[in-house]
Length: 147
Length: 112
Image (tube, rainbow over all chains, first blue to last red; front, side, top):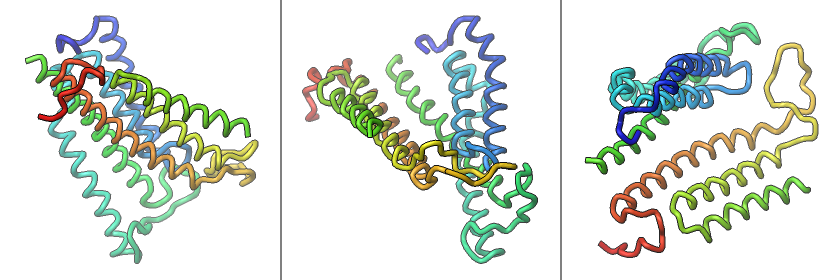
């Protein structure tokens, strides 16, 4: 990221292909959080690393064009509220905070376990955006220094 | 027992780095090694010989699962480590902007 232009053509081409596979794997980990090891945090970290991969390969400007930074920022803020809403709905519908108010479904199915997959997705968005913005903000220092 | 001793040695390696190294980045990395040793210690407490991860799976009996509580604790600990490392790196970057070096012996004018 020295000249804010990114790395060589080889790295860029490989990144353009692999970044989607990494994101897909992260989504898989998040969606199967209630069935297998992993979950919202692990999957969110994987997706954030895909974004960081893109940031390292293409530099800051291209990443700004590729990802809607403001939208990601809003999603990070909204996910905390969404988590709270799901929790408070537990008070309203089932008696206690974060109680399960959806049908539990059949065991070992993808669409089961009540609110846990929803919470996993919300945590995944939060962790992904949060981890990405940590590195994104640290990179601002670098640009200030170069100016 | 040997595992606990190796884990303690890992902690000592991190401590050695924190005490003796002069480069700020190396100090941050040594701190991360110490954190890994602490996490490993907690996981080792929960480990059972031949144990399986504590998650129900289709067609598998619940036998010899490791203790899930320290694993949940370590997950929280990893998040806190992430925050600590990010803050330390931000401080190191600010110090580099001010002094143009990561060498802690050359960062002397801390007042002002």
